[in-house]
Image (tube, rainbow, N blue to C red; front, side, top):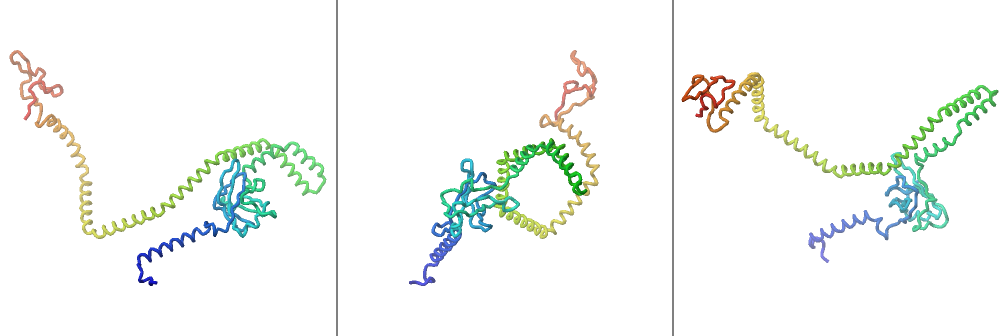
Length: 348
């Protein structure tokens, strides 16, 4: 057998690289290999998802024993599929209950299991919705509060407090003060019954509106997450752009520093020209003002062709009679004289 140093080094390097890549892939996908996978998969039906997402933890008595694999809609219910480590599956009995619990104030959730029953839970049989529970929702709380307040007879409640106050009228002063305060509270509640009912009704409508717009709110959050993910993916490009801008700035700084001797005189001359123009600003403005009519007249004289064209008034007498014809009868009046009156236009 040849030593490695006597073999083809390119082949040895290629084989070594392939083995390293396979080792890394196997290390990262160890849990996905069926023979090495030490977890069992279960499922449970819930009335709603309550924010549970794939990847959330599965806990038993506060200890992580697995993770949520998938959360999908199954008819009118939600089916959550989760995996549990094999050494913990022995405790998942046929009476096990599942609940979605709040993990953090930011809204993270986890799936909590309470093992019950002697016989093991069938992995192919989902835990029914009767043995699952979701977090208490704010809308349900307001709905129950509205129903409870509407069922209270505030007038009868006020009378009951008055009767109790009259019955215990002879008791000690602290008790009397407490009962009087309780009576005043009942009267206040009774007098504000309509306002309280309206407040709770409006609160219920607000919660119902938010509930009906749940999909839109979820889309907004999802789009925000996608935007943040895209910004994170573009982080390297943005970082490279900033680094390139810094390099360009450094190159420009060096260029200016290297050519400072040549640039400085040019800038000084430019400043001198600017100062001269500033000093002669009025003269330049007057020159441009006077140049306008001159330019306009010059354009009119040379605008009809490659010649100068003009009308000379006053070279001939005001009126000329020739062969019975009268020329220039109106004389030399610049306001009415035209090229077809008097002497014809001359071109030279």
